[in-house]
Length: 110
Length: 114
Image (cartoon, rainbow over all chains, first blue to last red; front, side):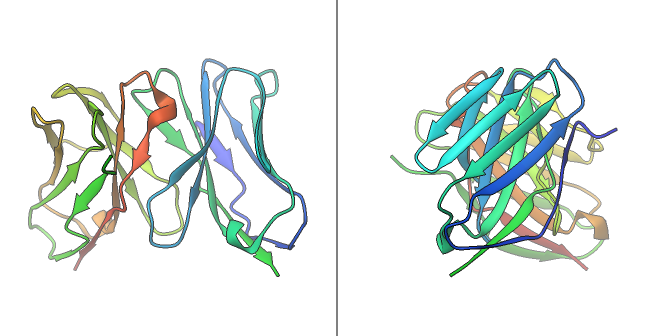
C-alpha cells in the first residue's frame, strides 16, 4: 500500500468554480501535511502547510486535515485560469522523508 | 535572498554512464533533499542531507549517492545509468529538517538516458 494516494484527474472546471482536491494516506503517525502547486516544467512550490488536524485558510485556499479518516483536502474558491497547474499533496512524519501523491492536473477554463 | 538553483538544466546520457547533478540551497538553509519525478508522477524521495550527513533515504539503490558541502550545496551522483533513470531530478532545501514548512524546490534537472 502506498503511503499516500491521490486521484490524478485530470480536473477541468469553469472560472469561478470551487475546486476540491483530495488525498488519503495510510499511517496515522503522519503529522505534517502539505500541498504543492507545480506548473509545467517548473519545480513544485509550497502552497499550504498544516500540522496535525484541522483547517487552515490562506486567501482563496483552504487546507483541511481529518486524521481520523486519514484524509486531506485542498479547496480553491473562485478559481482562476492562473490556478491551472498540477497540485501535489505531501506528507511526512518528522521532515526527513517526504511522501508525495501522484498529483492532480487542474485546468480552469475562462 | 536567492532561491534554490540546479545545474545543468538538461542532460542526455547513455545507459551505463555516470552523472552528477548539482544544487545550491537557498540562503540560510542547511537541509537539502533530492527527488526523482518521472513523467506524470509525483516526486519520489531519494535522500536528504542535513549538515553534511545523510539524514534519510528513500527506496533507491546504492548507485544513487549524494554529498553535501560545508556551504550546504549538494550533489546527486547516479552510477550505471539505466533507461528508467530518465526523469526530472528535483532538489529542495529547508531551513532545518524539522521545518517542513520551509521546503523550497529548485527548477529541476531533466535527465534523459538513451
